[in-house]
Image (cartoon, rainbow, N blue to C red; front, side):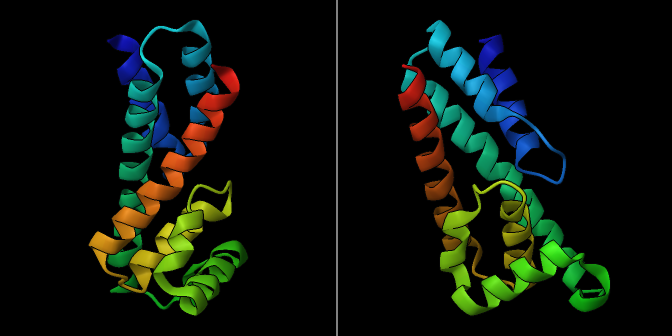
Amino acid sequence: MLELWGLFVSAFISSTIAPGGSEAVLAYLVAEKVQPVMLLVIVATIGNTLGALTTWWLGSLTAKKFPAEHLLDKNKQKALRWVQHWGYWSLLFSWLPVVGDGLCFAGGWLKLPLFLSTILIAIGKLLRYLFVAYWFV
């Protein structure tokens, strides 16, 4: 049970501003066969999605006080433009390293619908973790 909490925390932290290695944790746990693979994938997906929604929420809060052009670094400004162009569909790519956090932040900043944002973020995260798990089964 402790390994599930460790995976959840790793996945959550990996999807916020802080760097993390949830894919490595998942790969190790899958290879060691400590829990059913789908349970590990679901726990990682939930943790990573909640972390992404935390970043989305921070974007929403920040948008109330500061204009994007003065606050965001170049990577996040690029993510903001990407989300402005592609809308909520861009959140399917929230799993990407570096830019994924920016996409979630921009989604909150632009006040994309929370329910739809959650679904698309979760789908992207799930597909990534299924891919990782597949390679280590």
